[in-house]
Image (tube, rainbow, N blue to C red; front, side, top):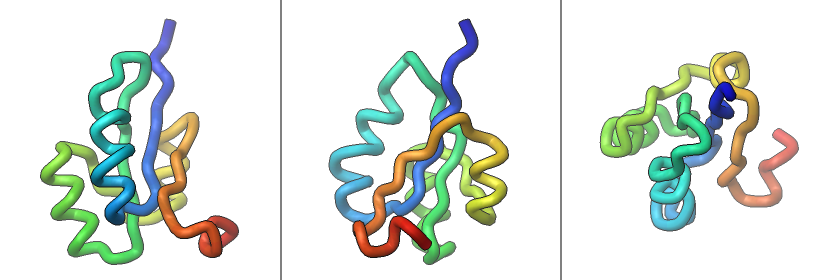
Length: 78
């Protein structure tokens, strides 16, 4: 069976402390990439976790079957 391709949007404190360790350690899926609005910060975090940085939300969506949104609730629609 093909592994689910997962992405992450938003790389703030909760994503780094709670979600990236879980998403990165799981074997049922692959963490395909991540995106966050502050590119410099996002690239640094992606390098730390060995996750490809997606240049845009559209690029991330093309590479993933599902995406976890780790931004404040008010920004989910955007």
